[in-house]
Length: 256
Image (cartoon, rainbow, N blue to C red; front, top):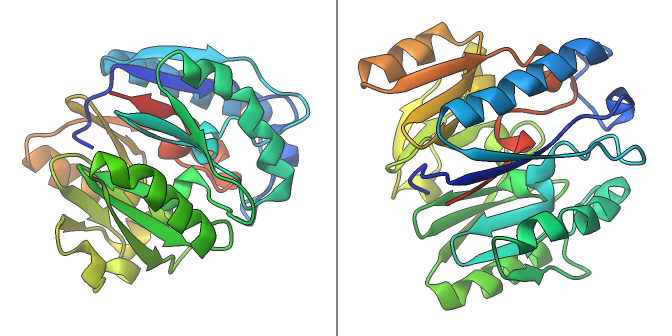
């Protein structure tokens, strides 16, 4: 996508967010700080020009504030996913009403599994990562739903971390932040890769919102690279979010 963002949908983390799924090994979250970081994220979306809808927490679903995983949104359609983590599948029903105000809805069905963190849209090119959460049936069903709108889907393996966008992130205009593990990917030939140092690889999960790139703090070399390109940058502390395997893209659905 170009980075154009008219509307963003987010969800406030619940008090039991620390009970969510995590393989980070970074320790337990401190909930008050997580709330502060989420509020700063919402404020940054708004400052970048998005009209932000913030949904209420879902007490029964500690991972539900990672709203990106339950839908894939393009200008023509919103596809409700079927998360690979069984504990997250009931979250899908709770995003329908918010998305239906903006898009026609379609949905994936069993045996498909797919999470939005494994899907990167660059213009009319869609990259779908096969991971522990997204299977071939999910990739094929998504491709079939997008094909009538002239999207081209490329399936690729997730090489590191939880989702594809843990190590690859679009920041608009065909520019893609790429962690070392993906620098030799032939699938990315239509993109302009911006290599990111291994120690800053978490910052590959940055997002463009209109004319601004939101990026996690702790990646000074990448920040310098983006600023040198004339990019307006907002840095955000994501210490608690990262403990739950999360990043910037995970916490909102961004609609043109």
